[in-house]
Amino acid sequence: MSATTPTTASQLLDNERFWRIFVWTVLLAGAVVMILPFLWLLSSSLKTELGVFRYPPEWIPDPPQFSNYFDAWTTRPFALYLRNTIVILLLNEIAVLVSASFCAYGFARIDFPGRNIWFAILLATVMLPGIVTMIPQFVIFSRIGWVNTILPLTVPFFFGGGAFNIFLLRQFFRTLPAELADAAYIDGASEITIYWRIMLPLAKPALATIAIFTFIGTWNDFMGPLLYLAKDPSKFTVALGLAMFRTAFAGRTRWDLLMAASTMMIIPVIFVFFVAQRYFIQGIAISGLKG
Amino acid sequence: MAVEAQGTRLPWPRTRRARRALTGYFFISPFILGFFLFFVGPALVAAWLTMFDWNMIRPPFFIGLGNIKKMFADDLFYQSLKVTAYFSLVSVPVGLVLSFFLALLMNFKTRSIAVFRTIFYLPSIVPAVANAVLWSFVLNTEFGLLNALLDSIGLPKIAWLQEPEWAMPAMILMSLWALGATMVIYLAGLQGIPQSLYEAAEIDGAGRWASLINVTIPLMSPVIFFNLIIGIIGSFQIFTAGFLITNGGPQHATLFYVLYIYRNGLQYFDMGYASLLAWVLFFLIFALTLLVFKYVGRYVYYEDVGS
Image 1 (cartoon, rainbow over the protein chains, first blue to last red):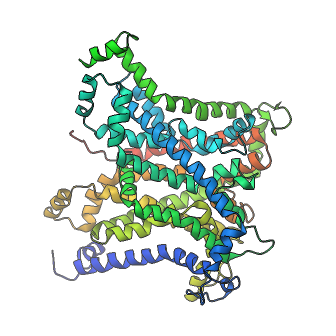
Image 2 (tube, rainbow over the protein chains, first blue to last red):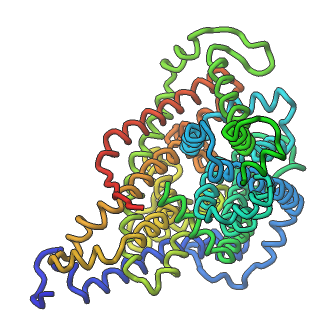
Image 3 (cartoon, rainbow over the protein chains, first blue to last red):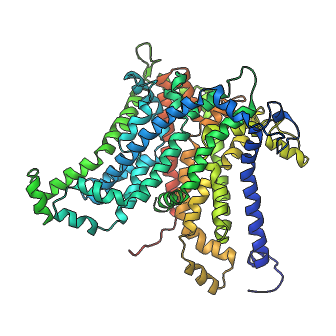
């Protein structure tokens, strides 16, 4: 390393002192930018109806209106929306975990003719935009009377549980040693027994990753409930309820209550993230690197 | 042994090969069924519908190429393409570069990496609806956070959601808030690059810049490519922000393509036309992906993995 004063940009980068300051400054500035909208959300959610219109904005509302959370929760039946969401959530978790792992086992551990072709199709469907089938699916589901039910939002997950999830689990199953199943084969166990009794318990970390992604996906989904549940307020999910909550107050926009409701919708996601951070990172590593 | 054991239990089919095929297809059958029921089937229905005028109440009326003619004469179709292309062309490259840059910096700060990673990642898992509600207030002209910040450094306030020329920059800004999702994928890739390569580069006299160009970027090119493809596909599907915050306005400045499909299908119930638009989107994304594979894919460096 030369100790001379740096002249070019690349020399400046190699200057240890400059480099460290540079990295810290950029990352800290970036972190502040990322956090600011969250702080704004939290701060606004604790203001009075008119306090949100104070300018310049005050960051720490005095006194904080914790009652906003209660008001937002009860102005619309969010408890009901939460219950509706949990029903869909539970069904989808079961569907995805069982169906995706079942298919993934076939792709990962059984060698059969045509497997590679079907795996290529699987990968292609990961890439294909789901939005393309939105309209014809709506047509079909309304023909068979599934509109205004949760069936369109849950039944498809029982058929493979999403190509991406199959892919992720298949990657995981392939890392497990083949000898694990050999003893069971000798004992005459069928593939189903091996899948259910031996492989599935070992796949717990990968299943946890998928469970988390399914939770986030279902909790955050807006398009699905908008298409199939928007006509019947008693069937709203939290996401749909929040979207409709925007216009709940004739002529006025109650930013204070909207911010409180949004905060409540974000909290479970952030909570799950912190509890299961390990699995998040794992899933990202598998999907990003081997994809 | 295993063969015999299974053979005694399952007399049919006779050969081991046929049995394995049967078992294999049995396991992947949910996927195959789902593929036909929820993808191929609907796609064929959509292809058929493109030739009809149908509002789901009257019987479908055959109009042949009528919907295609309508599309080519439809100003809003072109507008929605333009809007989506604008969003995609700016948000994807800017997002890719910015998140790569951040991941690079973060990769050097090994001790505080977890904290920064969390902070940068969190915005990307915020539910789309909560995100839209939050940002419609952040972007509020009089009382929003963004204008308060601009104002505090002496810049004029901008009517983000009322001026057609500012609505799209606002949407792009909003999408960049979620760049953490891309960033963590880069970060996982960066951590997979063996340290020995950097040490070798250093012995050869390479500085930070030189090892970035000669080691990091070539080795990261598959990950960059992956993020590019995912980014393009994702950007063409943006819907919620345009639907909830601006409802396509002002003056159709945020009429994203999917929003336009939604309107035709679920608001005007013009199912034939909406199906056509969906198929056009499919071909556009397909063609774009092929182009990217052809012209960008060749720059991707794939390591020869021994094992």
